[in-house]
Amino acid sequence: MNWVKNFYINYILKFTILSIVLGFYIGSATALFLAGLEAVTQYREHHQWILFALPIVGLLIGWLYFQYGVKAKRGNNLIIEQHRATQKETIPLIMAPLVFITTLLTHLVGGATGREGTAVQMGGAIADQFTKTFKLNEQERNTLLMMGMSAGFSAVFGTPFAGAVFALEIMLFKNCKWWDILPSFAAAFFAHYICIHWGIRHTEYAIYLIPAIDINAIAWAMFAGAIFGLAAFLFSSLQKYWSMLFGKIKYEILRPFVGGVVLIIAIQLLGTEKHLGLGIPTIIESFLRPSGTYDFMIKILLTTFTLSAGFKGGEVTPLFFIGATLGNVLIWFIPLPMALLAGMGFVAVFAGATQAAVTGIVLGIEMFGLRAGVFIGLASILAYFTSGMEGIYTAQLKEGVKYKVYDFLKRVAKL
Image (tube, rainbow, N blue to C red; front, top):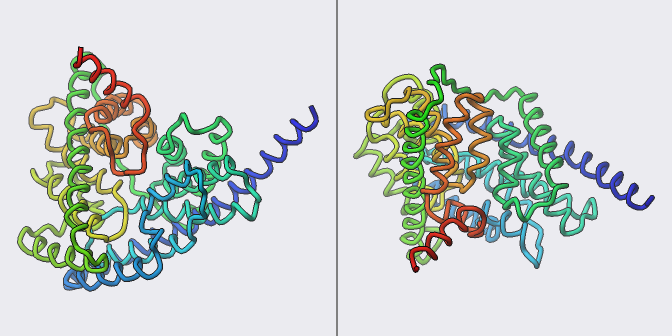
C-alpha cells in the first residue's frame, strides 16, 4: 500500500504548490485589473466626452481579437469546453492580456459590462499554462482549470467560498471528483487574500432588517424568486437575440463599431449614464432608497447589447445591478423590507442567469449572513427553475436537477 500513500502525498504536495502559485498570480492579476478598472471608471466619469469614442474603441477591440484572439474570443465558454473536451488544447495565454486590456477599454468608453468574465478568463488562461510544467494528466488538468476559475471569481468579488463552489457548479458537480474540492477552495482563498494584500477593497452591502421566517415570508420570497428568474431568462434570451443580429454582419471587426454607434445614440436619447460601466453606486443606492422604475430593464438592454456587439467584460456585476434594482421596485407589492428584496434580487438573478443555484445560496450567506441567506436561498432556487433551460454560458450542458424536472414534466404532459 506504499504506492497509495505516495500517490496521495505527491497529489497533496503538487496541488498545494499549485494553489499557492495560482493564488499569487491570479490574485495579483485581478488586483491590477480592479485597480485599472477603478482608474478608467473615474476618468470616464470626469470626461464624459470619451463616450463618443465607443465606435473607435469597438473597432480596436474587434481588430485585436481578429488578429490575436481567434480562440480566446470564446471566453468563459472555452474554459468550460476544455474541461470536458476529449481533444485537449492549451488555453492560449494571450487570452489573459487580451481580455484584461479590452475590458478596461470597454469601461473607459462606458460599456455596460461587468468584470467576472475577465477575472475568470485570466484565471483559466494563467492556470492552464502550468499543465505541462507540472506534467498533469487529463483529470489533474481539469482540476487545474477549476482552480483557475475559482481563483478569478473569488479575487474579483472577495467571496472565496462562492468562488470555489461557482467553479464546481459551472463544470457540473457530477463531472467533478471529490479531490477537486480542496484545491478549488485553496486556490480561491489564496487568490482572495493576495488580492486583498495588494490593497484592494471590495464593495460591501448590508441588509439590516430581516423579518421572521414564517409561511407568509417564505411564500413572498418564492414569488419574488420566480420574478427574478424571469428577469434572468430575459437577459439570456436578449443576449442570444442580439448575438444573432450581430452575426448577420459579415465582418466581425465591424460588429463592435456598429454596436458603439448605436450605443452612443441610445445613451444620448435616454440619458442612461448611471447604467454605464459596473453601476456600483446605483446598486448601493438600491439597498437604501427607491430606485428608478426602469433601471433594471435599461441595464438588461445595454449589457446584453454591449456584450453581443463584441465589447468585453462580464455579466455578473450587471446581473447584480439588475437584480438589486428589480428587487427594489418589487417593494411596491411584496411586503418584505427593501434592502432584503434588493439582496434577494442581487443574488437570485445571478443564480438564474448562470444556472448556478448552489453558488447563489453560498454567495447570499457569504455576503449577507445566514438569516438573510434563507430568503436569498429560496429566491435563488425559484429563479433557477424559472429562468429557462439555458443560461449565459452556452457551453454548459443541459444536465442536472433542473433538466430532470423539466424532462419529467414534459413526460407527464404527454400522458
